[in-house]
Length: 512
Picture 1 (cartoon, rainbow, N blue to C red):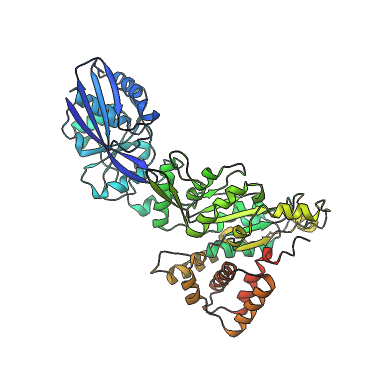
Picture 2: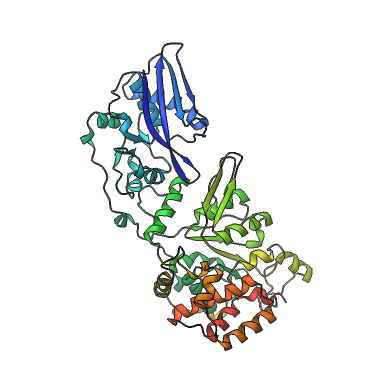
């Protein structure tokens, strides 16, 4: 007998329908899976066999052929287990085929018949909105995630028995019904706060500007000056995600398997901090079967690269295109995949190899050649893509010993960044961007008009610092954000002057 079951696979960041056909006929007992299955799918034969037997059903001595269609697309992962098991039971006439084709099935089976969570439930639910199915049957742990999608009934199940009972009696399980906004998880509470950081008022101001306009930044200072401490607290002053951003980010992490299954939509912006030994494919994505990299997992959030010069130069150069285009294109012989990568780059570095070049309390032991060699690990084109260069000086003893209040809290700073970001959202309401950092050249001309005094100041900066065209645009974008924080519509010379001082690497006079 022939049975047909429906499921979905994942290709890059998109889900595609997979039809599972099971034929149980006469012949030597065997189970064959065709349709380009990977090892995880091939091994489902043993998981399904044990799950069927341990659930009280028979796995008869028949020749069973399982076809995964479309046959020319690689099938990956164990999420087809549930659909294969029900197809075998239907083909062997142990359960009725009636109603089986009306649902999409997703889930990995354990040997006792329990259903384990699967990756990509949200992406699959999103892809089903235009198809004629009665609902999506998913592991109970994935139900809240998949229920973000309206108009698709989500049926949570725990084991194989429960699925069969539901197919026989569809009223036995009520679909999960949730409203998207109620599923938006609140930002996770954190013990990190900007008030913990002593001193560094200049750096805090720069980070506030970065958060308000979504600008990339680089922290430069000696060891122990607080670079990592500041960067780890940076997400606490970022505005929350819009529902659209949350949906897009949750979908990425659902497919990658990094989503907390108990949550609905992600409410906190992702903060990724890979080690400096991370490879280029792990950073930008790729591999034999392309997977999203750190730049995609940080989409709509922050990618923090601590000790920037310690990263392999090839890794850093591979990030230039994602920083500019906000997406990664990975081409293979049979397909091309695009992964979004609209992230804020946060990085930190020492001023030299020994780290004490700018520390007045320690003597730098590096020669001029060693300093130049250390700085040369970061290319000019990459530095040109970083908006703010913030020097983090070593703390004075009085600051370290002080027990008084250390300054504003993250909540106070975040209130200003949220207000500035709302101004930008209103400004760009008819476009696909939400922050000043993402303006193109035409939008810069429209939103950043200069008076004569401002033009003279910028001309002087270009001549003195040798700014590139990209550096010039960066200064205008930062100035626009500074004006938004001040609640002013026009760009003033003081806004431009403050923006220029955040381009310390263009001056190059900090090395000696």
